[in-house]
Length: 633
Image (cartoon, helix red, strand yellow):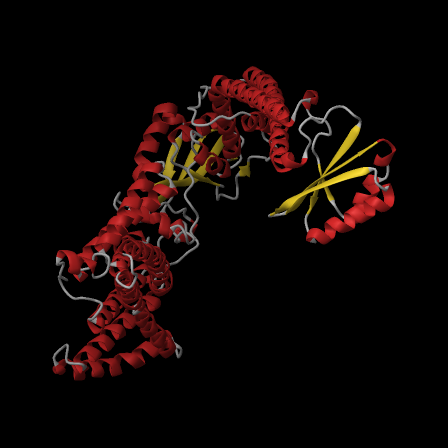
């Protein structure tokens, strides 16, 4: 539901405006707006401009420091107040910490870079190991480490020919075997013969690999490899020590930095709130929106702090239009997770209808009717429980896990209705029988169930549309009611025609349709027949529930049949399980997409009025997820 809002006006002595803003911030219930009285003078934007600039500079400094430090899962230590001296002290500390953290990070990155280089060299040593001499000595011979990527033996012959033309016999070229990305090669030359080799390699398009020209200490290849590994281990140990020091700084100063950041944001939010006020020579005026249920508490708080010096008055509802009020959704705990589905669209306008309770009933029902398998439902329930355990309270992921849990419950229920456990495996192994019908065979009853749900869903949408518009648009409300009546009459006539209802219902239903049709045109205009046909098309669109559900059970049965078509029982079981996993993934994706479509297109279109402004009460910033909202107020 959408909370009822009251527009309030708060009056008090001008010199106590800042104090009143503090009281409202403590209350945390007022969505502040600009006062509507034209005779009042707005508070100038330049008010507290110097302080704001100073605070934003300090905030930028603190945030830069927090980005440099690994501050995670730390409870902020929020000061009660922050003076100019406190702010200067925190800025100086933040500057020192940032420089230290950046120095530690830079040193760690450099050491890690060296360790990565050693990893690369060790890898290349493994590749070129067979081509290097066991004892390289110190004979002034220079080595080039090459990769011949294309051309096979032809590229090797071309390179060798170019070297012979340039150097004669004054070189040694050793080429390894073909590997995935080419051939490794080592070129060795000494003295005067080494000149000009770089030009030959460049002209031949050969890639040179950066290996050290001399092994550490002139040692053997094996000794050099051991030395490089030891050096790499030392570098990694130093990196870990630097990271521990950085984490120590974060643990020591992180709570204070987080707290002062929240305190600065709190003060900035108060400055912004001051600028929403208006004033005269002696008084101030603040206006805003408060949930009706919070109004008495706010009035009592102001009386306690100001006595007769300030007053709160509720502005009469006829002086504002409903769409100006901010929107706050409030639903019972069982429906609240489904607000995530509603919030995927713009909020409904104030005074319209919150569709969350209807989504909470119909969306998991549609999902369960489509998937409808006990084993799939239990699997989805296990995934939902895992997501619930891994998610934070009041997070989107927590809402998704609870919505998935409701869908899993309906899937299990309809699995028993259809008698399905991994398709027909439950019937084969456990003797599971359908409680109502087997949807693999009973296509017509399944289709009838889907269309009947469509009739109910669309009718509820029209009724909600009539209710939401009866106050401001009575003609539109009558039109919505007539559309609902026409859908009922068409359904009754069709059911009577196929003898599901007694035949005596057919003639009265048709006569009522003939009478209601011209009335509908008078109320809704000449396009009413097109709208009616579109509405009937909306109802038939719910047949997708049957189509998706039938496809799901057929794929599950096919997966079971495939088990027996493979020679090995184990291979067949694994293949069938894989097919079931694919069917499960499709069975989760399809009902989600089409369930949302049936709500957003066929259902919401009948009554939903988007475009509401979110209720953002002016309050203290006490968590990171509310900081931006408080600053936007």
